[in-house]
Image (cartoon, rainbow, N blue to C red; front, top):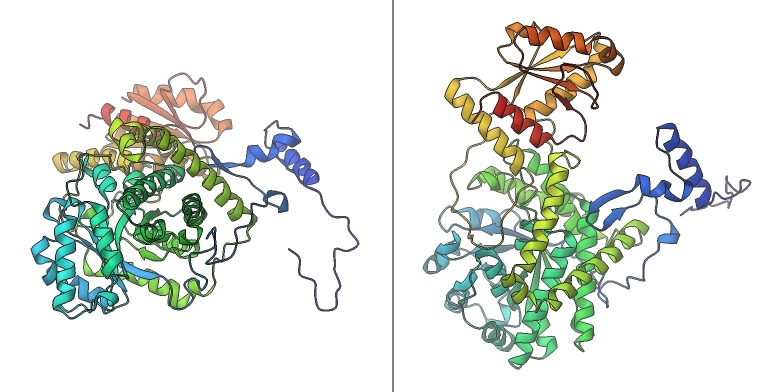
Length: 604
């Protein structure tokens, strides 16, 4: 949008407006110069980026891509926020997760910026034992700090304990805030076992009748995200779960409005900021549609709890996790989440230490208090890209929701394996992108640091398992690095590959750097300089320009084989050079190449 200066002078007034077709033609010319033969009509597709199966980002968005009117904040379809004032009063609810009762972390968080608590309760979940809940909340002003429980099928005992603590400490029922966290289908997705707790309708009726500030239910979409699901699948599963709970609550006598007020939704926030923003906006639109169909359009304002994605967290170079969680938190805030949990950067290594917890809570504090991120309601609204992505994601999520409903609903689809199979298919596609480094992971598949000092934490209790798998982006490369670490511990040295640089630095530096980066991602130490015979490894990788390969690749391959090389790599696109066994290049299956190389080097 062009804003004219005060004098009304438009500097481009004398020039004709450029058309979309002209832009496409110019793009086609540039692509042809780079060797891609495309037509004007397919130029944009050639530059588009796949976000996830069925969802693409185009290189240019204009008024032609306008999406349906998202409405106003606080009004149906609630795309722009569930409340008219958004988070302008004080930002989002900074909610931190705790699974231990005695380390003082709860009070430390509350004294330094955290505004609510997410407590994992139950020894079977590696959390706070129900009898120790009171001790975990010692010193907590429960009328000021809401508590959200995560207790699996121990939710009945945990809810009773929490409400008893409220009563003992003189907290009036109308002053109680938080969520009892009942989520039978989420529990089943995590553990593979049917929920064995009290009926959720009883908990909901109890809250609706006596505790207006408490919600009874959580629709946790994290199990589907952690099983490798796409954003659309996460939305579809959450919607199917929410509808299942609505049915149960209304059948028990609650009105649709009362039932909707008992449910909070939990979503993952990833470092793909625009996808996260669009997902949260689409989730509100979808739930508003469910409420509308159920006859309660004004009750469709979805309450959202966003959690920085566990899937994106890495064990190697965990400091980069701080960057990932910062972007994810920004996206959650811009997307309109009511509460945000930032997982500590060392979450995947064990029990987070005080420094990691401080960084986690301060991430939200800086974004709210210093960046003033919450002072604008729905700042991404109006962007042609964000509005179009929100619309496309809403349609994809609704389509997956309908698929689950056709399978008999969320419970039936979970038990039949239909949900797990679809999530596994999505993860297989993403795993291929990770293996080929089309989706790079900084510090793991890109820019790894073999000499980094390991970050050690006390072991954390094992999370509940038996249901959907928990996947991580770094898992394939982590397995390779673990093999290298074991070899280092057993022999005192890492597996090695000699990088043979051919020609001047200008010819070999780019591919030498590429090869070094690639092999280190698998825990293989690159050896540069000196002769191959002195490198102490049977593997060598030739690094140079295409022109020098034509002149010298085959001769050098013969020389190193004569000197004892059993595996010769060449950094560059596949060719037909005699004596070269494997070509490594951008887009090759790095995991397969590195795994085979470790096998060759005798690394178990």
